[in-house]
Image: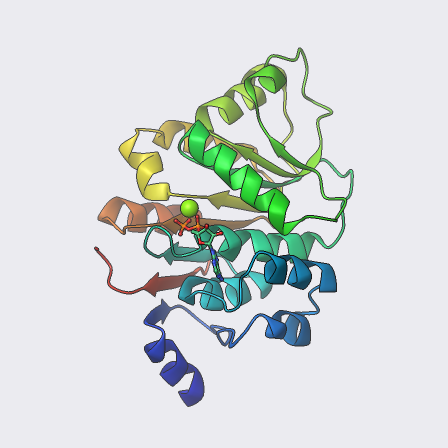
Amino acid sequence: LERDALFRKKHNIHVSGNNIPSPLTDFVELSSRYGCSAKLLRNLAELGFKEPTPIQRQAIPVMLSGRECFACAPTGSGKTLAFVCPILMKLKDASKDGIRAVIVCPTRELANQTTRECKKFAEGSKFRIKLLSKQLVQRADLSQFSCDILISTPLRLKLAVHKKKMDLSRVAYLVLDESDKLFELGLLKQIDSIVKACSNPSIVRSLFSATLPDFIEELARTIMHDAVRVIIGRKNT
Ligand code: ADP
Ligand code: MG
């Protein structure tokens, strides 16, 4: 525990919450501690990712332990892998059991970018990673739609659920990415209806943000259970 504290200090990782798992010293620990597939490790190596970034060091073990994660780290600090890696590991294999994970991004551009990143990390696997595109929401009925990871903006996803019967009741992982922007853009109501549509009682929610205004803290408190709070650097930079 003392060792974890020193290691966190060295990497400017601040945590709060109960029973926080040790941070990762390297990516190899993903396989030694958590049984990560050789394929995912190979993909990271091929992307030139040698060492986890501070947010990845702490958020990945938190999510792999089945805990909800409330994370704040600067733009460009590798938040995408911090949530995509544990989701890919937890989902284990591709399956057709409905929509299994949802990542909500504030803008189409960010949703696009996140989809591309996700696909790179999952390269060589059978995972079905889908962007909720305009063409897709225009389909008459989405009640049978399934994929391993669905990425969307809030408005489009809300539309798919309310107008096209998209079923989010089996979603096991919900990530609200760039949650500070989701709020700045006034997307709170859409987020609320998405959170409600993800009705699986054992859902694990995560919130990632570049800044930590009070309303984000408030949201985290209202939607998360026994979350681990991870902050990299200082709270409001
Ligand atoms: P954020 O969401 O925090 O703004 P991103 O997830 O978009 O950051 O990552 C920023 C850039 O850093 C991307 O180009 C990504 O591929 C790269 N990156 C992420 N993690 C690592 C890592 N461990 N090593 C090297 N590069 C990384
Ligand atoms: Mg990001």
